Length: 420
Ligand code: FIX
Ligand code: ZN
Image (spheres, rainbow, N blue to C red):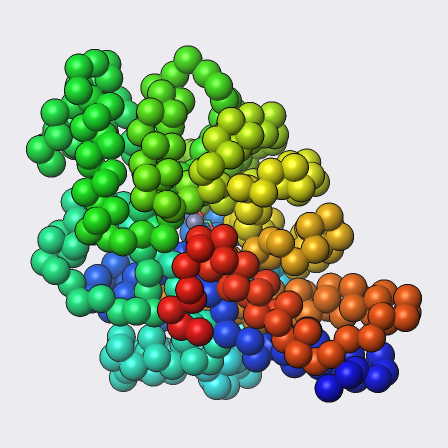
């Protein structure tokens, strides 16, 4: 049906963004068969590292050690009291918890943590996964799978049952960022590697990657890179990228995802909450994607300052797909600015968002909040077309939105969406 008025247009776009199922291309969630690697429930929500960082800002009296010695439940109590009772929870991470509790149907006026906890004790992980995926309208979740993590490896070794809603991504940070300590872990897994990359080391790293690709069937390989990532460069990291990651990605026909701009552990006392960011050199991205035009790259950058040049670089290189508003960018004001700019420069050839959820329940807020902004930006963009005399069919808008929320990703991979 042809859209006849602006009111009709806004209503249709908003509703379609709200109801179109999502492929969430980067999370830290796990399927039920991974056991306690899947985090869920109110105590996990409250102890999310974003909220830990915010709590310390209000509690100069609290020592880091004292906090870390508390049980998870005690940490959650302290965070709830500090961020939700002693102050109003309007930071994005706090608002996220409120959205989740509201969407689960809890009575927020009581602010009764014990009542929320009682619900989570009463439900099984399997039922809760079903409930959250349905409520969040997320059809597929891409995990982050680390073959260097002995605990997670144990889950793969035990032949954990596959859940088609949770697909793998092979994470290679230890290989590219911590080679000095990782090479011995490869050796323990039976690969003939040496610290100085001599002999058959590079061939053995390729064998390791191929073995894990065969095992996990990942949609892509991924790494987070520091803000001073350089390419080309005379370094172990770049040798392994050039001689192992790129040829294996090419042979397996899967993309290499680079998440660039992290400064790890600027405050180690905060543990996972202690990472920060820095502006990166877009030239490094430009050089690697244009050198390997037959390899696909998924790229997100952490600094706001890199966003415009990243979008322009994607215009020049069709093997580069920009994705998501990552971590410190996952705030409404920045998502809106970045999404608007990307749609203006790239049309719909972009993945506007991923959730980065670490806790299952967060799918509710991360996608609710992002959908609202993507919908708003799209209303403006279609509205501009409408003003210019372009009339749209509902089917065209539905197609575009399905693409933005998953289709673009699957087409880039060259694979059919298994949940379509
Ligand atoms: O490296 C990553 O994948 C990051 O997303 C995480 O390590 C980070 O801690 C995070 O949770 C960001 O949202
Ligand atoms: Zn992540």
